[in-house]
Length: 77
Image: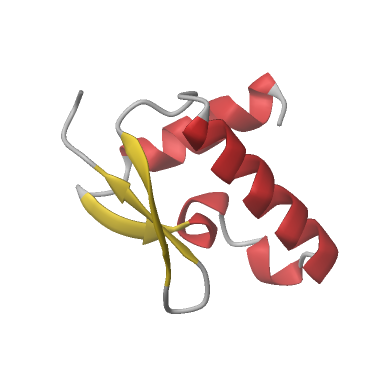
């Protein structure tokens, strides 16, 4: 995941309310037009970045529901 992608996703995360979300919620409107292999790749890269602490205030809940992995935005850490 490039620094540019991380900055774009951080911007989109700031727009979300506190609570649960799926990666496509922050990826943007082009998500559905991506090839399935690219969706898997980007989703996995985001999960790894969250686990590495690149998105403070975002938690990987370890749960898959409603079509994908559930993340949680907490109040400012």
